[in-house]
Amino acid sequence: MDAVTVRTDDVDQARAEVGRVFCPHRLTPQPGVHNVRLRMAARRAGGVGVIDLDYGQAVRIQPPALETFYLVQIPSAGSTTVRHAGQIVTSTPEVASVLSPYDPSDMRWSEGSPHRIFYADRHAVDRELARLLGHPVDDPVRLDVGMLMTTPTAQAWARGVAFLADELSQPASLFDHPQVAARFEQGLIGKLLLAHRHSHSHLLAEPSQHAHPGRLVRRACALISDHHGEALTVGDVAEALRVSVRTLQDCFRRELQTTPTAYLRACRLDAAHRTLRSAAPGASVTTVALQHGFVHLGRFATEYRSRFGETPSTTLRR
Image (cartoon, rainbow, N blue to C red):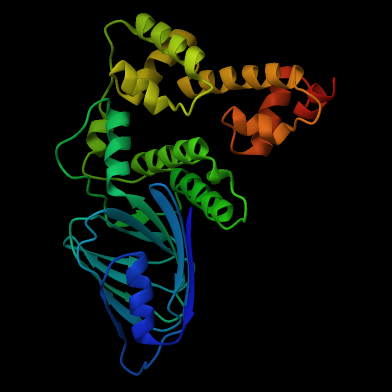
């Protein structure tokens, strides 16, 4: 996990420090502004990261094409005018700006517009889209520049980003565990691709059919049962079976009236239950939960109690 914290009032130092986190760029205080009040905390795990960035003053930022990563920039106050890929967006707390790797940008941040910025590696985005579709795409993934943050799906995604930021700021993070970090990375990028429009959204919206849904579901269930203890995601299952995530989801609903995510979670809950029942003295619920892929410990406790009629700690004490 990488972490960088910077505070400076010097424009040149601000340009250099932000450039080290993102890329070299032009940083120009707006007319009448002679310095900045930069406050930056950058945290990254694997192919995703969160950067809290505030220049404290009105500035103009002109980066070249980012090339290797995407950014979703969410002001918590103030506004930003963003020119990118032939579009102009006024970004506010209700509308994020999204930069794809393939075009330069010209941004004017107002005074008092701290941003929370989500970083996603380009290759991680390509991999997750391939999992969702069931096949890789040849054309670049270009996200729309404006992202409405008031929809339920966008708000759910933003809660995931907030959780990521909080965990990465802790001295000991859940994401220190590589399998947990990889699983959360895939989920967060996948949710972004489903929540926000991009150049391949139409492919995700196409009806999905499979000639042998029952056979596909049986193979998926066997795969999940055999490998649920590993860093397995629904995207991994779909990729292994050479179908899209949506096809897999539709077949599960048709055959089992559930989702592959729910089936995977149930397998993990059952495995956690077995582990807690046979645990040696000194074992902890947290360790068992993480061992079986549960990142949100409160959600794990709630789902466990719903499935087994008691809390994890009660099972452990038996």
